[in-house]
Image (tube, rainbow, N blue to C red; front, top):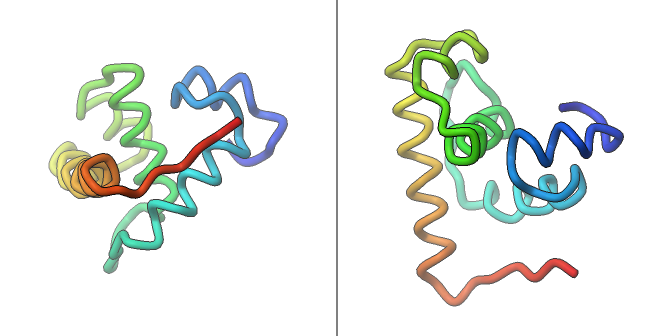
Length: 97
């Protein structure tokens, strides 16, 4: 998903209503996410995590789609879930209208 015109794909793969919302959420949560050397960008990791949550895709299917190992899928998923937990258990919130 590269363009704002991919709103239908964004909604299908992530559950978010449009590209601009997905990008806004990413920009907010990724500021606290530390990313060392990795095979996927922070955005790709974020997208993969949303796809796993929304589409209930297994690690093997995501590994094929993103060209990484199952263990790497698991590692990225755990890291992003920790970010999610942090933002949902603190007073931080993002409102979209």
